[in-house]
Length: 215
Image 1 (tube, helix red, strand yellow):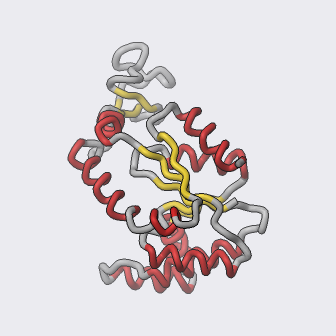
Image 2 (cartoon, helix red, strand yellow):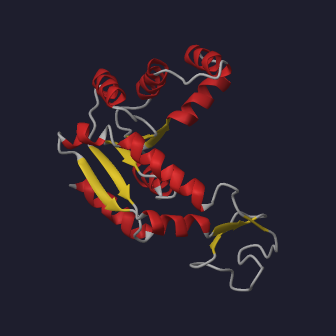
């Protein structure tokens, strides 16, 4: 099974990808992670990417395609792929088709986690974590049982991400819509786009995705 998982930051893509990796043995292919790994390993593609990034330029579709091609070629035929952050344009979507075909694969589904923007702003701006153990909390939905004390480790230090503010969240939503708008029609024409309520409880989102994969 090979899928593209779409959704803006905060929609729960990371959580659902981790579930698919754990329960189905799938591999999450994040272009950002792959680029960093290739640069660190100083592979041929990694060195090309490093040179481009050091010039302050965007990494070309050709380099990203080469990374994905190499990753798929190294994976077992029985391991499914979750594409994260790619493709973002119709040209990249066409390129991905060629890479998949070359590696004897096809794209099964494009699953979009849909969100309500105002509710997402509330979800993200209210979250904070224990500075010691990383346990997650929320101003509205999950406060520590004892005020100011982490339930898990007892620490009294908490932190918030500096970019978890309304202006940044709404900007991320605009960027997401701009980047996904070009590729959805490309896949809708094939009838493989499925949409899930990303604002539902985590376990309900998981069940919805499982139902899609089982169909």
